[in-house]
Length: 269
Image 1: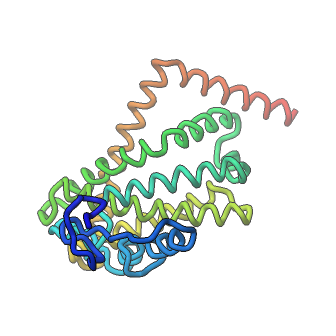
Image 2: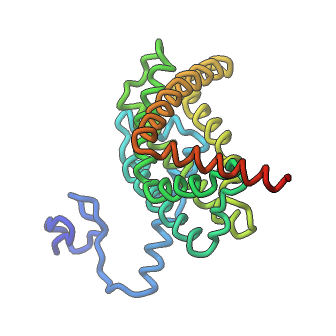
């Protein structure tokens, strides 16, 4: 008998390949064994996916620190975990747009007269959400590298791994919760505002455990992180405004704002 995965010759009584570790399949595929395989893959505590998800809350330093130190079999690797998060994010956006479009209404969170402009921004972000998720990670890793200066426990590449796990975990949770919230009529914008401080606290929790810092130390480093992030955001805003001025989008927004103010004044009169 040969392994169907790597074609290594195996004893007839083997249940697993001693070369690649693949399971020996003797029965034809049926609904029953397909369901058993899905259940074993996703709902068995001993499987890597569920273990990774749970331990990212209980002991993130074991999951992330273990991967950085070379433990690669116990948990899902950061690239695969991030790929799953991107897939689920795309799925939840599809569900919201298809079944709960009212949850994507951000009109209550924008300045009067800029609704159309804001809607274009939201549509753009949704369309390229996976790209934005990928771009955030190296930026956050760079800011963390600057913020944790003097603590040389992790290099830049290792911090990318840290934020890959963090982004994946928060995306998985937010996708599930936002869909449930949409079923109860809670807008995506409200949930996003609620999630933001929780995401920040969770990132601080992960870094605290990884760097083995006290509460005061992580609080100070978090403040430094936001200071660096604020400077980065100012630079990004300046670049965006410059691009908008060049392309004419800024003039369009100003005119829309002026028209909204004139309409409001006329309504008062």
